[in-house]
Image (cartoon, one colour):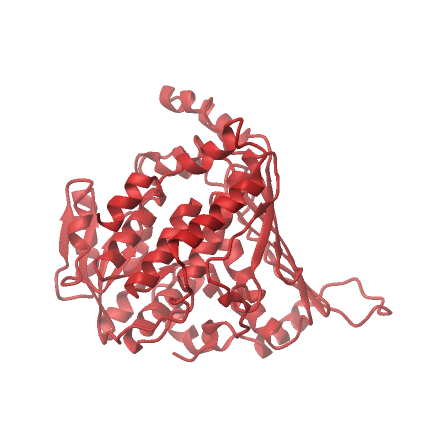
Length: 472
């Protein structure tokens, strides 16, 4: 039996197993048994950590099959412009269920690439034909969330490397299956967390590594983004796929924009690891009120079905005793914010807007953030080498979220060109996604503690500097 067939039959690609264990009278309030079940599944999968520093054969020109040609897919096409023109990559295939989006993507690609990518469209399964290692080396997945794990597994099974938009998984079983497949096939599987490449986050990482913060002890991070209008729009998220998740799930549905950078700050999986969490969701109000206020009877009916709370707060502990507060809110009207708060024994930073405090000791009577001029000095002195190297390219070419999208794609393609391991591996993406799944489990179990299982076979204990700083 093929592995994908087995996964489908055993329900590893669905939410039913996770949710039923916490909504049934037998499972509710028994997180210990749930943790034991997860550990048993990891043991049965035989995870061994072999893909942690995975290197594959160098690919001088990476052939890319791009799946999902909506807003995010179109944006990443722009990010590939320079890489294609420099001969580092080629978009060899594109796939979307919408023929019109495929045609639009062809025209977009034709502005910088002479070869025409092979198109796969017209039905829900057309994408499977594009998962062919005779056609592509890398599957770039920009589809709705529920397809990410399935597509990444199919890519690796068929000999392609997989790069997926976030989240790469949203059940514990999905995370286990991705790690297992990456280890068995020796294919890269990366979650494209662009915020790990943002200028501010890289600056903070460099200061932490250079000792400016002393001993880091706590961080607060989030994805706070009012998406009500976009979720209601029937075209922005095709058929309102993102809205539908909020009618069925309650927890942190989008962990990684905040959590990814914090995991870099805390050396997570590189000397420390996430060990447990507890999660709580507020009552829901803002999204259902927005739906009820429309003139669309279908949306008005959905207003009564929203189950995702407006604000989810998840507290996470690490093996070294650090703490993380992670929040999620895409319902409430407020300015965009990822918090980006880091606390250390010698310095503290708050983001949005950026504010830095340097501690001068317990006797110091200072309760003011550094002035803009003094913070600018720290920014200049501790600019991350990666950003310094790529700043000109990020500014001269389509930037995407202030340049971080370009830097992310540059790093992915150039690592594949040179046969190097990637900045983030399958264990990173699986862990960050796993936090979201366990937040839902905790909410369903009245905010009880959920242990976070180890997917690395203990390799997280080995201290090392984060690979994002390598000169590639």
